[in-house]
Image (cartoon, rainbow, N blue to C red; front, side, top):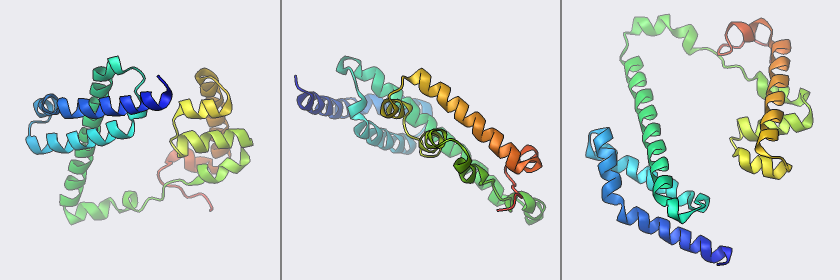
Length: 187
């Protein structure tokens, strides 16, 4: 089979698996989430993720495992979002006196030094950090672009991060060591 036919078959098989497995996926979610509305929401997000990543499916024979891995990931993201929403609701419901007491934390200026200090690194290191840490590109793609295997990429990324950490500590000093979430470095 040529690659276009394989991609088309994989896409069709993926779509069929979503349609045919809808009831099973919703049952899986309903058991874990406890209500139908959340299950439907997570299922919709799951379908979007599957359809946007269908080209990542390598073996159609292992589609069920691949689908359930994405489903669990989507469900975990839902739990994380729910936790953030509940923390926000608690923060909003606080007494105004507590809000005034928390003002320094709320007014904190997160450290933006790392993005500015990238220019002090080697070009290769800066590019690697921009792509993987800031751009959140897939390591596999970056490794292929750079002609490296994943282990070599990991070593280079580790060294690039160490160089950036050193530059940050040199530039920021006590600010970085005390509280990186409230930067008072000169801009």
